[in-house]
Amino acid sequence: MSTTTVPIGIRSLAVSFPSIIRTNDYWQQKYPEMLHPELKRNKRSSIISSNEDDGFTLWSQEVAPYLSDPFRGNVERRVLGENESSLAIQCQAATEALAAAKLSVEKVEVAIVASLFADRLGMDNTTELARKLGLNCPAWNLESTCSSALVALQNACALIQTGEYGNALVVVSQFGSNTVRERDTLAWSMGDGAGAFVVERLKPNQGILANKIVSTSATYGAYSHSLEIDEIGKPRIITQTGENASSLAETAVDFVRTCCQEAADRAGVSLAEIDFFAFSTPTAWYANVCTRALGIEPERTINLYPYYANIGAVFPLANLYHAVKEQKIRENSLVLVYTNGASATAAATIMRWGDVALGTAPAPPITTRDTSIQLQQQQIEKSDRTEQKLSKTKILAVPPEKREQIVIEYLIEWLSNSLQLLPEEIARDRPLITWLDSLMAFSLRSRIEADLEIRIPIESFFGNNNLTNLSQLILERLTLSNLVISQSVNSDRESERETLSL
Image (cartoon, rainbow, N blue to C red):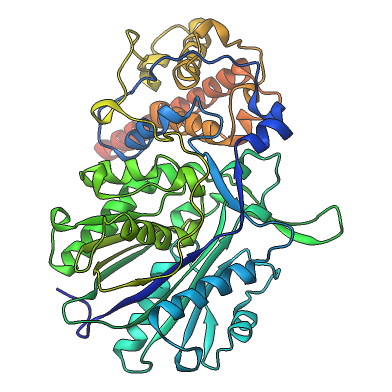
């Protein structure tokens, strides 16, 4: 059942990006030590640990091909130059969206802006943007991290549906490159950009059919933000991987299934009827995670991550723009857009695509080689080794003096499979940071916690901690966990005896 009675949707669409296209060569030449050149990786297939369809296993399978690539599948990212401003990029996108819709600034009735990490610290730049564009209408900021575009679209449609306004200009941007330190590997995945679209009435049977938005509060703490003063005395926000980063992997499949299926149910269509899926892709493997989670063909979506890196809230607009350019979307195509904003909302919107006018095409990528990692038959071929299955029960079943060796072998095997190294190349006394970046540390922690049913603090994988330290911590946690269970069982038995005696 449709959630709207009047056909309302996107009338025009534009995207805008900074002029600088930064390739991996930038870090290879400027910070070669970040790439751990001492690790010589062998070209072997990674191992799929399970065929189960649970969310974490599915995510792990899609991550596996990228673990031996230090840049995690990213090739290019658009970043602000010294003489460029976020405001200028936003203005360009907005101006082109208005021009494509043939709508003058005087006739814009309301503007909704989502500006993540814009030039102005601590405040959004909505007012400044409205002044620069020459808008005289009400304008306000709306933010829901990477789901900001879809949340703004839903709000704009609702306002027009009630008759409060006749049209809306939505401007969405993210400028993440200025919030990360260049020596942090998170910088490899951060890109900048802006997008804009005009929302108004469309032809009958076109426009938004249904929305589904859910809370992603379970991912709170996936990223941390702090204030620091740079070398010229200017304050800026610094983004880093947070303590709860593993929650992004653990919840990704559930969120995409819940949002997309419920949106389809509300629209009265099946996922099989959708012509094109536009998934936000904050990682190189995210599109594969979504297509597998929903059981759809990869050809029905697009993955721009290798060329833009993570552009957050701008991704749905960039995906739609490029899909139209590549004729994957045509007028009257049934389109589903999905976004997942950490610590905010996940959203799915189903729309019947209208006669959407487009702004000027962005500069093409400068990398011409194939950047995709192809998986044969949707999974990686297994090598002649099989991954060791380990559980809390198996460890506690062997004599105490043999347990540490079993745990170390288990950890070495995971590192060997993930890094495509021989087991003998991984020394137990070497700091874990030699092998692990933040992504791999959280992946390993999640694997340990899922297999062994214990909790391990993320700091145990950094600093001078090595395999021996980690294995000893794991055994301590296992022993404590077993002791608590034993005490609980004994307490229950004692309670049963007291009840019987009464």
